[in-house]
Amino acid sequence: MSTRKAQQLQICEPVPGLQILVKLSNTPLVRTIITTVTHHQLAIIGVVFVATLVFSMRENAPWLTVPKQVAIEFFSAVSQSLAALLGVLIVFLTFTSQLIAQRRYEDYYTLQIQIDQLIRLTQSLPPELSNFDETLIALINYLVPLHLKDFPIWTTSSQVLPWDKLLDNFKNEHELMRVQQKVSLATHLHQQQILLVINNMEEILERFSRLYNRILEMSRFILAIVKLSFLLGVSLLFLLLFGIIDLQRKFPDLSLPVIVSLAIWVLIALLELVLDTWFFYKNLYGSSSHYLRFFPNRNTIINR
Image (cartoon, rainbow, N blue to C red; front, side, top):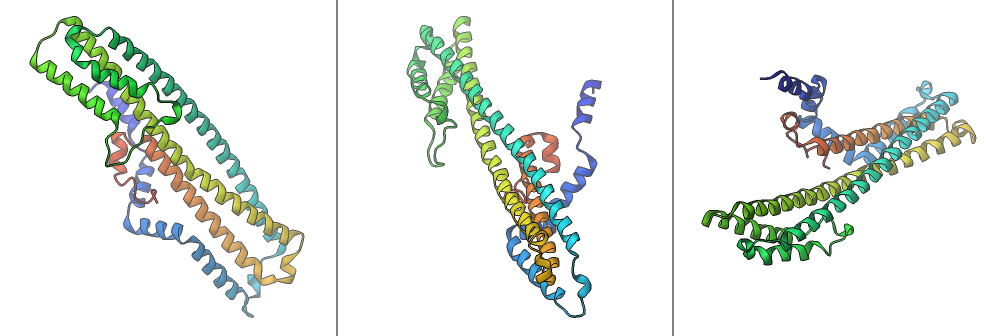
């Protein structure tokens, strides 16, 4: 093995700590715990709040009352942290959305160039390839009217796309012609140019599908922003109640349940954000071989 290949393999090796984390997250117990926590978080928060409230209202537990200043500092720290995290998420979502839109436009422009090239090749089709006329013209007539909003091209699982039918017909005819007869070098090169253009268009259409999936994945971060914004509003509300209205003086037993419940809720929201980020990362780099070695179950915990 050459030194260059050895260096490439060394670069592709995953971080050892990451391997341990992935193996731990793939255990059935951890998957069950994470799924239960994320799917039943409201019930968990409610149980924690009620249990903490009952425990703090006991006569022999006055030491559980959180001082007013500590409560204010807690809500202030949570509010500042959530606001900073929201700012990062909004910037990331905005940048990624603009990047996706730019790539879609570039792919559409590249596809138009390939269609134009296919039209020119069809116009100069050699007589030996005249049996490809109808297939190529049908392919051109299908692609030319499509606009950017029409990509990606979707259909139901029980149907076959016209694009797929046309490509199958062309490739079958090409293979049959290659087997049955020998053509001149110029005709063969012309045929290979057509195949190259069609392969390029196939790759572009696949990129449209991947970009569309990326847009769907970004919706997870939109939901995360909504949830974190709600928690930020709750934190600011209690900061107002404890700091200005002095709710703790009227209800001294309420401080601990509120603080514990909000802390657990924020931790669950952060856990969901980590899972969403991990899901986005896996779909971004899931095709590499070294990734598949250590992440065989790519839609277990994350794909909820």
